[in-house]
Image (cartoon, rainbow, N blue to C red; front, top):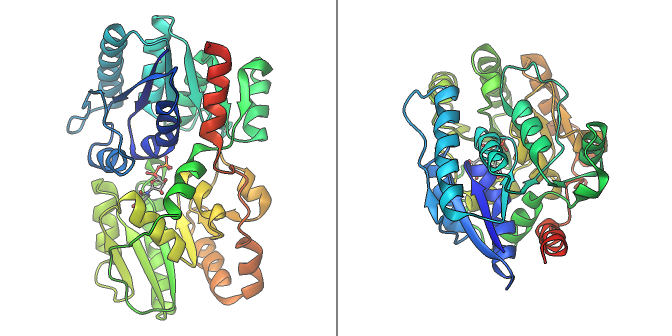
Length: 364
Ligand code: UDP
């Protein structure tokens, strides 16, 4: 059976890599990989790390491209790729514009679609950022829904997706993480000899502007009041992020700004971190598995499981909430221990094999 796996951005590549590698071990699966390159450099380094070479590459990014242009380019490009590859199944992962457009292109051709990381919902479709709509569209066009958790399954059932199309597999991000964290990792960034490290990632579009400025001011304040703690922030190249982060945080001795880290060094940084401040979806899933408390710099999340478990907290983007939340973890060992329990609601590292087993059952 010909299976086309699609990857557009860094997190898609990280989370699809275990599925691609597991499928490649199956004699019945003829696997090909379509990269749309919605992220260029960050996608390439992940694929290289996992030893995956795309069979096709749409290279869709153009400077200052609107979401409309991006979607149009993806639809046309993915359509051409599907017409020439003629896969039996298309697999997509997550909630990017790539996912939505490829889902549409496969649907127009009536090619069965599998959605990895299905059923995540904020419940807020009127948020102007496209992820929730992307998830909904992909979700309603898919034949297989690989839900990471029971609550993502429940979201799908509420939308009248048939139960026999849903498998709770865990999130493949844990497969990738456990595989990577078990290797001999080098951080590659020289850290000052501070006792504790706070790792920061923040580049979500919904925080651009004043919310992101408040996040940076809170980090600056925390760094100034905790000179014994080192803050490491791999800064996303988007000018809305880079310019603000550099203008507020550059030149502070215990704040280290660096370009985005490759995946393995980033996992090394998570392992070294005492706490993590992040607005990333993937980091919210990875950190609990490594026993690292995360303060999420957002007001809502489509990943409520770790919040319910008490190992991730939503602090939003208010200065006081971030400072108070982080300071408490730095000062109060009991509050820290309660969040650093190493409990992961997102999987056991075997999600990819469950996905492969379900596909084999239905296709063979
Ligand atoms: N990540 C990385 N290098 C970094 C920051 C993050 O490799 O400098 C990884 C991280 O381990 C996670 C993924 O990128 O798996 C998260 O990507 P991002 O925050 O861009 O997207 P989201 O998860 O919010 O969709």
